[in-house]
Image (cartoon, rainbow over all chains, first blue to last red):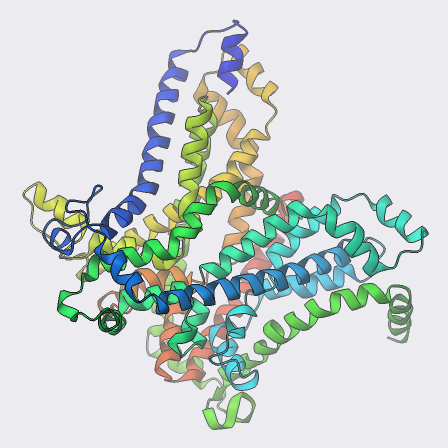
Length: 304
Length: 308
């Protein structure tokens, strides 16, 4: 970047060391990109390779014997997978909306300089990142006292409020001029009116950023499902996938739904096809939304 | 006390709406984060399901004694710390390297494309990463063994080699977080005034001198913040990562068991929950102490770099 400026202005030519470094940069970055994308290519290729080819020559970058068999098996009786999709969408949408509501409203309050207890409340939230009850206590509490076993709320509630997102959102809110709030107050607007009519419409990019972080967290969650969900009708997509990868029972179920025996099941390509189906929406969406993640990460790294 | 209450009352009257607005979040955090903390009392009790957390009997420090006398306590503590240190250093180093190289690239589209691709692993769940790892290392259909056979070498069963797993875990951890962390470092590097670089170039500094004397010092505060944030978690294993990579592979437990996976397995088997709570209790307390100490030390050396 700098070198191009210098070269263009014609003052100095690129030195040899710079040239060498430039080549190294390209090679290294290209190598990293390759390492990052190869597993995905193999996953996709594996999902359309015949079972026979996978058994004998393993996963390849390009499918050796092309077939849609795994996908047609999955979508022959798609009720299981559609239900898992439904659960994932449900918890993602409800959780993201509730989380955004909580986080924006709270960040508005703690960013108000005239609110005397804002630091006390901030610490109240921040403390939970320093100290917590851990898996066992949380688990026992959720099950015995909050009765969340096998409830979809057990998938929604834990990830709804996040202190890191609160801090990012606070810096979005702080960017809004205080004068706007003050003049609205002089005009006689109440706090709720100010928040919903003035603050929220100005927070669009903050809402998009935090909303996407929340949504990604919900979509990729399998851990809470593993702890709290018993009935397979309530499995979200990632946990269903995990089960399929781990247990032959889950595969056997698909086989029986498709009306073939387990031995004839193309289990390897089926697993890959399931992984593609579960990751598909993210891979398709992320090029368009990654700028929001970049923004959020950048803000988050500058401690607020 | 009376004065405080009067102040609170006064503030409440003045900003009633703000209190109402913050109430839902306070309630949520209270119920889902603070109340479960009271369960840590289990560390000093013999847990009986029918008696619940509060009805079970106290047994002093027995749980801690069992945990450490059995050797498990030391093993999982050591593993957790070693893994976190190795993962922390390797992932940050890789991210810094990638960030420095990416900012040196002039070609706009190449830069954008590669950056996007390196960011991709951040977006997928550990379940998928676990699948990738299985695809590479499993004995029969894994990529590794097919490549080995291609070169006429013998196939190896990586799943029965506990020694290599710390490396596999470190590599995939660095791989998954590289894009995320490099975003932070790229932002720090591009935040450096470009005139500084130009002046250095005019003065005849070569690229290595510029990186050493300008780039690295400029990203130092960022590095310190990142390390601080992670050091506070030095005793917390990334459960999702360990569980998806190692899973229920008993052969690998000695080499890869961290506090969090140990706690989970005990929970699953419903075995001595008091002992697991003891592990959690000691983990939480130590984490808290470490972050407080480290922060205090940093504050003394360089006030601007402290976390709080």
